[in-house]
Image (cartoon, rainbow, N blue to C red; front, side, top):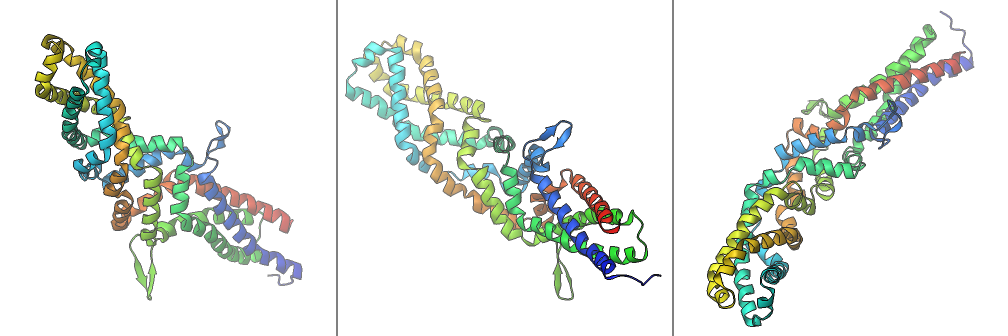
Length: 408
């Protein structure tokens, strides 16, 4: 054993743990960046790279929706909270304008010359007869929507469409909810890398073939990533030892993450505007049309029965019966086109009643650790092995470079 070493030799060996710490930090930091960036594919396929989360955005979003619908949000229960009387009051002005415009459109389309000569008092009677029934129709429509909400509102499509429109959205959600964990991964690379480097330094003093530093570089890059991921999510249940608590770092922040996640989800994806838009105009449009067709037909028949005597004074009964179905069709399509605009007046009320942020936050806080892990775990599970292998490769390259610079 040769103890005849120079001061330069001592510096060389002492540098090993520090360089190993840098390699651990660098490989972990690079792995995190590779999770998120670039958002769009960079390179020429099949050669190139796209951040793992952007590349797997649809799969990750789909799994997130499964968790939301199974554990956090029962959308039919939310719609059941809406009070039709309050909704009617909120929409009263706009729905009144639509109903009057619809009556004018129908009459001018079917009996233009007669309608122009009808006294204003008679027109008002017809308007008011319909307006009196609007709250009942709205009540029935809301009930029908509530009964069919799972068919009409596809939360998975809503979420995936939103993620496609905003490719950086999942990055924002994961980076904000997992910011402490990602910082830990970076720092742990430095700490673990330094500890591995201490072992490496001792071995290198007694036995230092050319492949030793590259091998430890590979091990450092691999193990620092692997250990960091393990410590974030394990152990799931708290373990107490010598008065100290040991638990996965992410799981310890359940309440903090719950607030952040609920805020992001309800402000960026599950907004009241987007929920109603998909229910009324997107995935639920066909069913809504069916509901409106039936309820508008009821409204027209009931109104006609009441004002039949009045209508009979200005229009021949045969003409009225001939045009009744046309009237229903015009009213149906007009309300279909305008209802989603009228319902906007009730958004503040729906926002207050649904209270999505607080409800989702509370449900997340109550999740078992196994389920709570699912909020962040998908960010790592998608091609997690790639991150660890890339860390090992980068560590091996750094080790070879270290050997060439220091010992050649």
